[in-house]
Length: 367
Image (tube, rainbow, N blue to C red; front, side):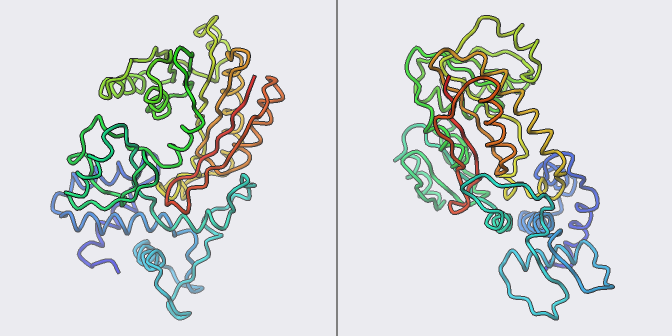
């Protein structure tokens, strides 16, 4: 049930949002413009809006009825809450309708389990960099409940505000499945590492935390991202990596900028559909065009193929996506192997559903 005095907020947001940028950013902007909405109101409105994008495509109403977005959002809240609804409740729900693509899934996850997972928000995870016992004591003192996934990974309720509680340099907010990819990195002092699509630097930070003595190069096609990455390394007191603004899809530019550089290990955390994270960002599920999968497949193949040329003999390439689709995962790996001669040492779909985490794919390729 959406309280009557909040319905105009929900309707305004749903009518204005186009999916062009993250829903979380849109909500923050909206609430800044409407300070009359208190914290509890913002929470209720956000739940209704997120519920709409989680469930709308799977909700059906009686023939001839013309439900408005508010009715859909209200029905979605009932579905997410797990409430039983009778046949005369006026609507039905079929998770299969949430996604129209008929892609094959990577081994280790099923379409049904993935679709069912879209109905709940994943947890918040932090990676403990140091002082784990102290961090847990601080969380307990503030009444923030958590679960210990392993010695370096804690899960908290989504939305838990840990920033004012924990020392900034002692932890990193990072999904549990993303943290698991780091278990494949075994950096040794003096090795040369290259993070090709570094983004916010989560993978690079794991390498540097495990072994600050590596020589680390980071590239991205956005200068602002590389600047932010550098600031993160400063915050954590880690050696600043060598950075290059570079479009990894452009073979000529890669050759020009990388020259004779060669690396022991290369991380390719490539752009993807993000389908393994859509439970966290349901607006991406709602607005996604399945035709884009083939574009991602080609983009990923170009990036990883260009990167593989810079491996030293015996080196490894870590191909990573946050997708659950075989077309973005195993099919790309097959093409990389065919075109560059690397071989698959191991590959894994990290299924985060049971842990209320994202799902990711990693393949370790050897030259």
